[in-house]
Image 1 (cartoon, rainbow, N blue to C red):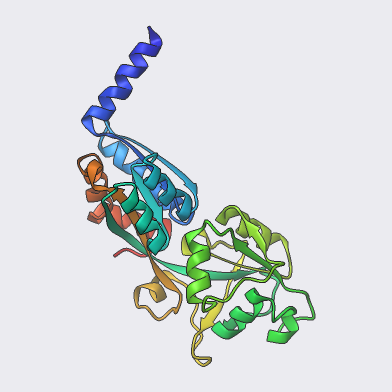
Image 2: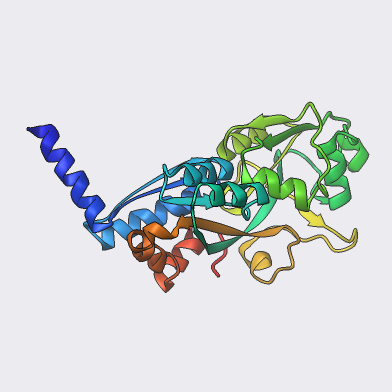
Length: 268
């Protein structure tokens, strides 16, 4: 009897278009969780579950039909668009917020700024010691997200000019793992979304022209002076539009965009 009641409740959610699944980007995880939490408080019949795993994982789930919304910290790739087409999925894109991608080091590291070219050298393995960029005689320990991550894709494209990561780069399964590793390793460097920056790490100033160095912050992301900024996306199948519309209306509302800023990202 209990199982039947649960099934009826689940069916009721499905019929009312209220039960929603969001999956994908770890960068967007704290944002979607907070948006969903507030949305459900305002809409007591709504049920929204949010899980991470990386942008690629979320988009793959959208292709397979195992999520209603894919959250991504990068745009869709061409092969993903083709797979969506092959699966008969007509999708829509929603830009939820902006993000400044922060390059972080251990707080004990005296280096406070790097050029884009120096970052490329570090992550491709050409620069191996902090003394090569004005720091101590200390080996550089490089942390990165794994290849399914949208943050990995964005960093490779926009910071490394599509060069390959060095073979000794340590791939982390989640953004939180990068923060933890960098905070505990003196020679470490990594990259994370702005909302993940904490006192446990030091965010570096970055320059693309070798002259003007700007640090990541809400202000520098808003005025676009920080050079590593990106959009944060949601993707959904148009077949579930009636189901997800209320959630997107909330995210894009004044209240939803206030949450974007509270979490540590940049409102539209």
